[in-house]
Length: 616
Image 1: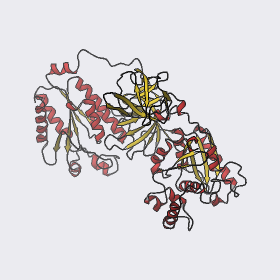
Image 2: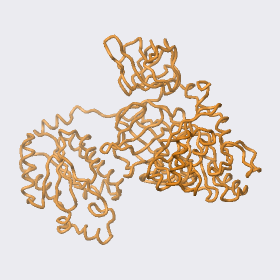
Image 3: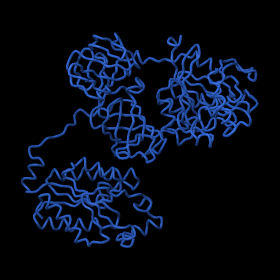
Image 4: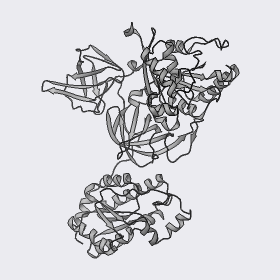
């Protein structure tokens, strides 16, 4: 009987203290799914941590962390597995606090139905709307609006109707297939598993009845075949298989498939499992496929239906939920994981933010933690994907910080961005190598980074004079000079600083193509941006020079009077005071101008150039 029951994944979400954990605890209790020893422990914990007087506090069944019990809030996602004679369930009890929105998104990413709880005494709150919007973006189409704690308003029907109407008006544009409002008191059990005598005016199903009967369209098996390769299984020379989980669709032995990236065709020979071969595999099954044709396949590649391949592109438009503590900065590089594939990606632009209260588009230049927005991204190599609306399994991705390895965003792909077909890279006979040979020098980028007043421009000027006197072809790029022209439209926000360095790097690369030695003096406060330059230019031609001086020394020098203005509040976001500076961890050259003269520092740079074969 258990094998014949279908599975429903759902989440509970909403604002803080709306009763999510209490509802699931009460549901499990009334279904007789709490063992006696667990119930006894719950009774003890209720006396120690509970908020319901002498009664059982069912929230403690879900809130397992000590911090959750002490504060009376949900922090992490709590999963519970249970079944009734009619259906099996996996429920994710998600946190309501805004700072844990990313945890809520994690729970929603695999759910087919969401229970949005609303405290009847408080009404619809911003976090209830935020969670509804995230549910919509993550592809959930069935909503239960659980108007909870109705006992606090004497089971007032008018209050229930007001909240239900307000929610319908708010969610009208979110694309939900079904919204069912249910009046509840999770603490007392009203309408949780059976109709309540306190709400004779409500003729709809109880929560459990609805969960057992709701038709959730789970059509993963009906979608085109997608199989991200997780592991190339080769225990010996006689066997070569490709292991993973069928993300969508179905596959049978003898069926023709193709590799998404190259388009190479092959035929499935066997579908191997630990319990023996299968004639067919469907979405959700973990299997190993062997092919009748030898084609080059690696971890991260995707095997797909020959007649319905996914899109392949290196530029995409995607909805982004930002989860990182540091803001999202267009122009910065991140690691992108989609299915089993990793690649480098850059957010090229933020098209608009999304107001979580209304769903309206708003102007924005960056995203803070828990913000939503539509972004354009470019990837280092083309990726295979479907739009998230068509296939959640192959249309969702995460972004990871390249330095901290923190997951900073979840993304849902809308569509590919097509490059203009008439734009190509022009190749000329005279290239960088030819110019370098004519000039008799090796083009390089000397990147001077440090606080304002540390001596970057002074040292760069001395080095350039020596190079010029030795007959070298060189040019100095200065941060202030570029802000008078090319970068005059940029301010000093974190996003503008990233774009400032990106443009400077592209200019320096062009100058190197002209055969020049480029000396660039920029504060460039972020390590990620300097690493981006190293990768853009090539590590062998990039010299990171940290011009170091204590901020007290820089403030005492203050050659441009900037520190004085910053302390007076006239320059916001000034590096070292209102904005952070991330010093290089392993610079190619470290110059301490608090201890050595500018001439001595310039001499050290010239010595390093001579070691690299540049006469000066």
